[in-house]
Length: 378
Image (cartoon, rainbow, N blue to C red; front, side, top):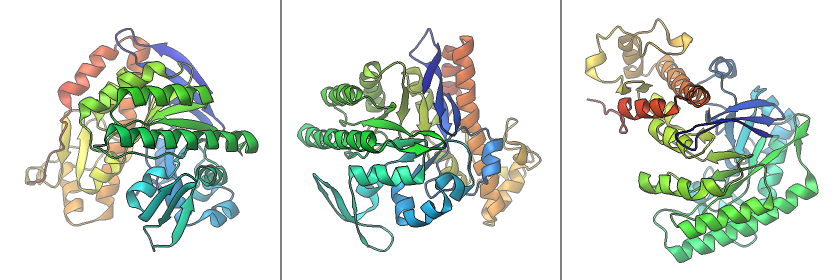
């Protein structure tokens, strides 16, 4: 499943390879987010041209719409969305806790009214795993409870204990049903929770490792906690995770966050920033972020960046600014392609730097060039 190919001598950064039923994922890797079964405004062929090894889908959203009956009739999520490479699906737990109306968390699972039409629904560890088996994703995440920030130690402890009990139920369901996809066994990742408490994070890691999942994720990050806490959580957790299994930081992040977490031993990332900021006119470049809505780009006939996606070449900043300001769809498509190219290229450069012994220099370069706060429109 996961093969460790190289390690960095100056940090815990790893170069690896994750084998899934629908193909190989080279790590470190960034996963474009396709919550509703599509990466917003991007065609599957364009994702392939970006060399996206794997994309992310979401159990909750696809369960609510279009529903499992339709996806089952379509032959699974890969066939439904015309994507032949690996897919990772989130369990839906985070969306239940953040989006659902009138939710009530109990031992058996979560009762809630969905965010679309208020229909009463119920999601349990077993149902979450069954849905993901129907979707046919290559990597399925366990059903967990994501604690908010801030969260007191006692509340975080109770939440973690529920997550661990749910993880054991997921393990039992997997062992009993042995879900398959693409001619091979579906992979399953446990999720380390525990808020910002070292003892809870370490307990979660040890107990999940003992359950022997295909890989492990760090959850409950980027929910409002200071960035220093995010890094400390990775420092506490990564050393306790098996060297021979993939590690995934969920829902992250900015380029410096990604690079810092790679340095701590994380292999996989997903984040909505590339496409979300694109829809607001913001592009990532190696010199920082630029908001193309700004007046200073009205007569800027340079490309977004010298290193951009081939489909973006030939379009100037001035033209793309015009498209964004006139709400033409091509504008957000071009910036989305460019931003995804930036993130996937960043992951590729990280892989190369680890292999060639230049990760320390790459890490310093990203910090020196990238602005943590995206540029605001004038």
